[in-house]
Length: 464
Image (cartoon, rainbow, N blue to C red; front, side, top):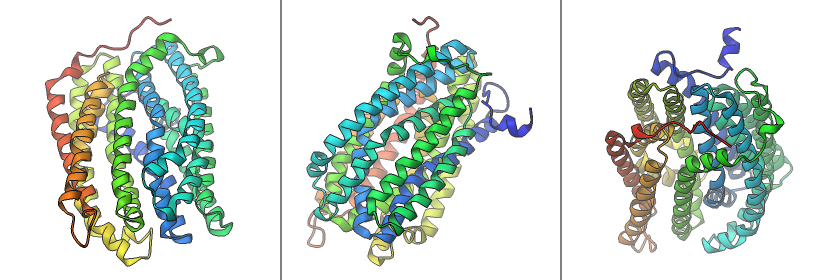
């Protein structure tokens, strides 16, 4: 087999130099995450340029609600990734196939449920958040179309998680890059030339996501040397379902809490007016790109740890976490410098409005140092999850979100009220986020050093 073919095969992370394995795995994963982020960012850039600042605010304002309603998929994807990594590391191909089949059926059920739930709940949730009148209808149109095509997003992310668990972070990248390019082309056609506004952006997104999901599924079914997935594996098997829920539920709950808190904060965001909502959308889109290396190294550590735990190589896990931390923190530091140097240029991609650009640069500068702290959080929590300890990162996430971030956002806003800012200074949102990230890094470091994750056993061998 050629080196090129090997690049696209499943990687065995239980052998070789740890830092090289982590980089080889994380690099295509990072590129894939960047391509994933291009979906919503392309929507924001194109509607901002072709339709206006209110359309930009509408796309961003729908984000927290969408994120809250897709937490089911986060749980399924996390549980599947851990199961696949450990079964692959232990060379248990039948268990591997059964876990993947169960995951695919659960995803189908969750997709159908979410299509109806999201469509029905969109109007009352937008009203509850005091969505500005000038953006309400556009938000609603975007969300209804997005949830109608939710299955594409769900299957791509979950199947990509399965491929990553097998050590293949390159195939998902290849498919996603192609789909992201298609999304941009469709955005320009439907929004810029056909004039469909935010509805065109939503249609472009779901069409592209279905394509990437189909390509990922085709790849997964072709991996017969690793796992021969058959029709009999595509069933809900009790023991695998329970194991998946046990592993994925904590991450799903953590994401649910974070998304719920984002809704609470979004209500505060909306109180600052449509201009700041548009500013927040720009900052969060850039934030999404800057966060990608952190998430990539975190996911790499989950797969690396899962495979090595499955193979019984705990010493190798210790070596990997040291390498992963150095890589993640170093990358985050470089990106922080880039934000500080080129922030104004980045904001200019979204809008030509000078006041929006100035505001975005100020907010981005406040939060920038937190990305280094978040790099530590992702690496350590990724290691704990890969070992099967998904509850510790969950509780830490609960604390930093519920106890730290949300109360501080409202407290800072209250204390900063003035004639210029009757509802508080908008910078309160980003100051509270920075404090939460710093607390998260500290608590994760303490929890990791305590070593509870080392006591977690491998997945059970007996299944029904």
